[in-house]
Length: 164
Image (cartoon, rainbow, N blue to C red; front, side):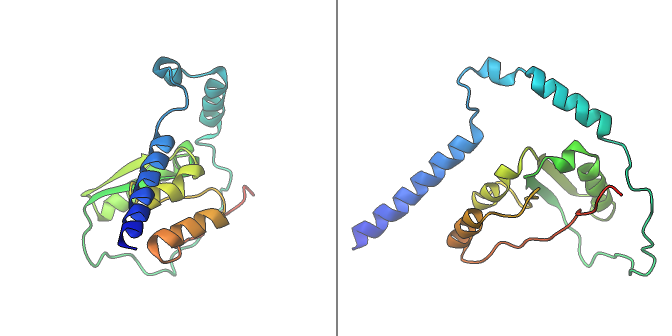
């Protein structure tokens, strides 16, 4: 029975390593071609640049009724974020980071915001501290997280407003 338990744990560790390797290695075996941007990539970058700084909602919220933030303690180190690209496609990620640094200047941010596909897996493998999703968490992702950590992932709904 003891041997079987050891094999199960070893197999689980090997499976984690294989999955992490598959998530981080480019699909193309040719490294030079993996670095080159395709016409679709260039067009996408141009489209995002054109929309990036446009303000769609001009009405400002009155936040005077909220208490002013005063930190109870200081925070330092690096906050690693993997997940949805929407925060870096717009100025939102850098805006949040700069506002956070006003109160905690010793904090650095490491943004790896390429796709929601990376969010939950990066939390599970310990490469991310915060993982924004551009969608709801799937049942498979929730189950995998729960089985790994023995609790449900915490989701905070934010940035759900419309353009008008």
